[in-house]
Amino acid sequence: MSELFLRNRWFEDIPVGEFHVFGTHTFSEQELVAFSKRYAPRPAFIDPETARQMDQRGLIAAPWHVVTTWMRKMVDYMEVYAQGVNDGRRNGAGVAVSHLKWFEPVRPGHSITYTYEIIDKPERVIRGKWGIIRSRNEAFNQYGNKVLSFEIDILAERNPELIASTP
Amino acid sequence: MPNAPQQSPFRSVSVSLSRADIIEFAQQFDPQPYHLDSEAAAQSIFGALCASGWQVAALTTRLLEDALVDEGLDVLYTNEVISLRWKKPTFVDDQLALNITLQATDSASAPSGHYHQTIEVNVVNQNQEPVAEMATVVLVRSDVTTSLPASAASEGASS
Image (cartoon, rainbow over all chains, first blue to last red; front, side):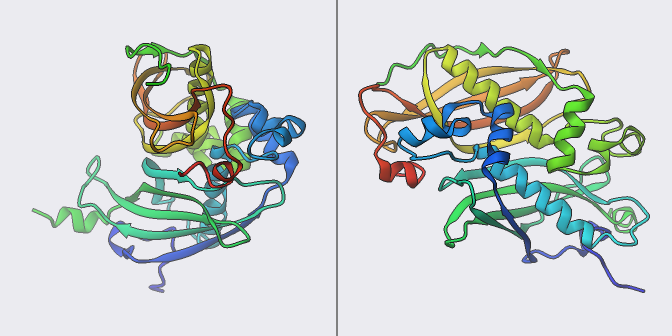
């Protein structure tokens, strides 16, 4: 069995250009307010009455809520491909984010679709063991408008045999 | 030039995340073993149960915006994160605080009566170890008599 699953591949086996659609999440007003009460307790994000009087004309999602939901969609998506993985999770921790921009508000009832594209594999070995997978991540609402974009560097374990053979 | 406060670094209040806070967030947004289970975390790259980096990021923006409001800035929202780097895990009950440095302001890119404020943030724990570094841009109202044009609000204030 030589089949490679997304979650148990070595760094060397992960190709630049790979593209995935993690899935779609519909945000309810209740969950927007619950998140914002904790992490963005400002009228624009927690008080529908006040938000309606503001320039944004209604309650909107806290910016980080749109990003943290990306994380959930990624974990759920990767779990599908982790069936039968019993040797740990080689692909894991994020180390850095860049070029993170929010383009349009996400409102209650909006359905956001998250995409992921591997754009680079910088040639660096971290702690003698890990490589870096750089991806561009985007999110689109139900009208097809981009609401979010960012790049993230995530660690992936290098094949120990290949590291050992590198002078 | 908008009414920007002093350019020297200032500090936010400090907060901590309990075990329950960390697990609750992870269950909703980042259900990976090292954010949910102490034994699994001990075997992981982090070595112990730690908060999702996204929980630290969201908390950082909350502390930052609260601190800016305390400094007298009329903050609307965060527009952009130029860079965010996680330096060290946040473990149960670690005390996090921000060192905040205001950098450039730009009103040309913001709607009338507003400006973009670039900010450098260093998140440290109770041992003053760096936990995260963030460079971010927030939209600030400089003139309380001017409201944000509806078109700009719906387009993320891009013009």
